[in-house]
Figure 1: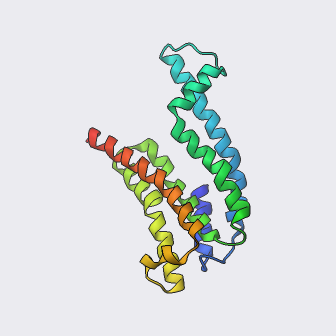
Figure 2: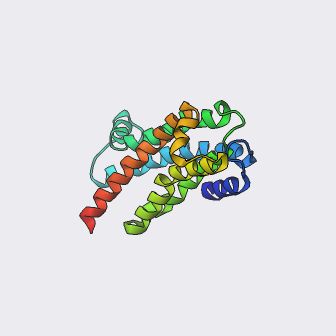
Figure 3: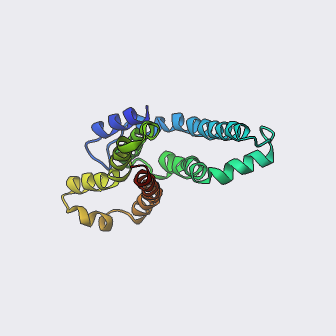
Length: 186
């Protein structure tokens, strides 16, 4: 659903900075409960796996929550960052600008189903949807304003570069982990 929303927004925003599409704003309100639900489901999976391993903890005890947070801290941080930082940015602080880029970020979710499928398909999908997405956004902006791509970081507001850096950093980290795991499997 996020990917379809993202593609719809990207295809309908000819001006990558100023064009508006209602899905770039409204889909966030689908994303917020989903992220909250996903954290809870990850916790339940963690708890059930612990039970299968013979670890006896009460379902919603402080010990089981602490164990979950320690083991899944990267994913929980990722979800909380989206809820606490990105949601206010997309809903309020960006003003009426950048629906195209919000759509691009939605498209990144296309790689998620492939995580379960594993192997090369997941690596390719992750690389295309989560890593190459950022050069694509910079290239789209460069094409629109008629500048070389390498000049984009110097022409866009600093907070846009900081936001992109903070979004791509965990993607690069995860991609590195994916490649390391793949190297062990192949």
